[in-house]
Amino acid sequence: MKVIWAPWRMAYIKHSRKPAACIFCTKARGRRDADNLLLHRGQHGFVMMNLFPYNSGHLMVAPYAHVKSLESLPAECALDLIQLTNLSLRVLRAEIRPEGFNVGINLGRVSGAGIEEHVHVHIVPRWNGDTNFMPLFAETRVIPEHLQATYRKLRARFRLADTHDGRRRLSPGRRPKRNAKPIS
Ligand SMILES: [Zn+2]
Image (tube, rainbow, N blue to C red; front, side, top):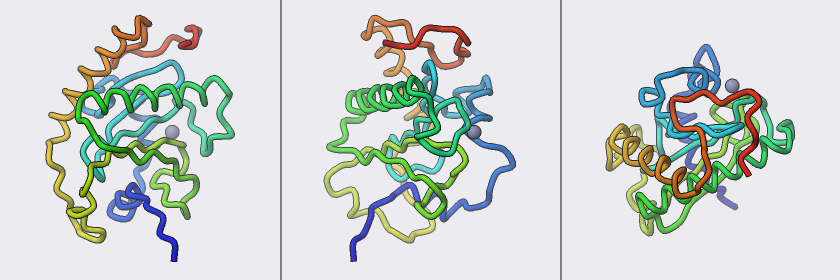
């Protein structure tokens, strides 16, 4: 039997009660980015931490558009999703130095998507041997760092990345302009 490794499925199993509204849309529209663990706002999408991480630094990248699947996204939004994913990888490499990543998208409930109405990319940092202490069916998991502590460190890195890129990206807490030019 082939086993597909899908860590983000656990959050769905453990927290299968649906919230009333889409959490991605709600958090993107909100203004309290720190409370919402929203790390970075791009042109067409944003990066946030997973409230129920499978590993330290488990991030999610989502478009502002509330669409179910990748192929529903306009090309510039799809491109921004990849660029935000790349930025997240760079930030995670710099801050928490993982040895690898699982990057993936679950489309449809049957694939393990916890929130199937709003497409999102999971980025899970991996370290050698981390599966040794990851119980598959445990009720709780021990995450080494408190989420808010990780949030503060990663947010600082995202801001630093903006400066190093020499490009003016939108920082957390700012709303994207409707007619702003795409990030090149
Ligand atoms: Zn949504």
